[in-house]
Image (tube, rainbow, N blue to C red; front, side):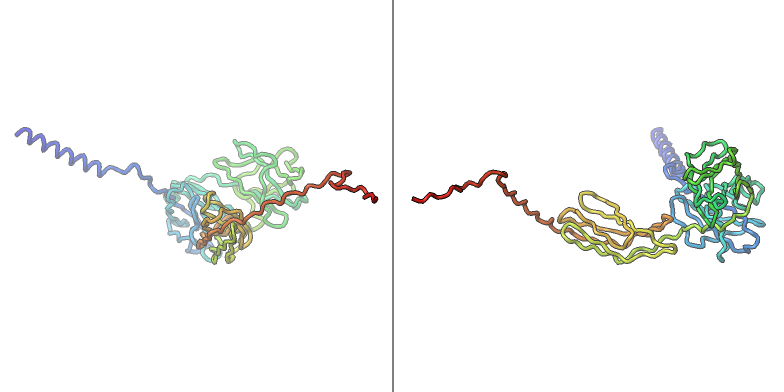
Length: 361
């Protein structure tokens, strides 16, 4: 009788352990990352605000992004599923052609709760009074026209950090006489900078360097203007990939294959194509061209090769791969053996013949 009760106890214990195991969390699976973005739009935007975003390493949402909901007075919010990413780039729009893209630099955010207001990224929920602003990037505008330069580099040191390598990093020429660079300050509040034309001429504020803080700063003829208005309209970032190339054909001729396809289109222009080849002893190979055709030579005889084509633009946006095409190479051309070289007698030697005159009798 006691043995029966013992078996029942063990059975009940097994059920309890099994239930506990079934209710325990799956530690092997990683939870998806999210970020809740609070945005304070300009008053003139009206009631419609969208956020257009791309998780780090992922694709952008379709323009104009996704709607944001009202959070509290003056604020909109949207929770974004980042998947496995740990951050994202975001821009905002009123869906009628007006954008806030951090003057072309986009806003780089992480996970958790983030605020964006007046070009400054912060953390916390602004609707509960728990928001804590952090310094934003430094947007530096340098007037090359006053120096007679056609371009400029910025050589800088973020407060508490190291100087960039000489001669610094290139600034983007945005409009006549003005160049721009956005510098991520991290948790710092400013930087020291000097400028040069990459040809030996420097502007280092007469040896004192320039002190520049977060936000928009202009430097013109030695005059630093903090909290300035951007002198030019920064270009809207290009987030649209080209269309998918179509009509790919592959034609074999001996041990070479000729490819041709229909040109892709892009809102700012296609700059080239990447062709992926599979098959043969080399495995997967990437080829590039700026045209709409390519001759792939010196291939292995009697081997099937398959190709796909993607288009890309100057911003690095890449189209999906088009429909693949394949071809099988023929036999390698026969090579004729080289003809043996004719031996010529050395100079000054007679041929093997008798040149003596015949004597008559």
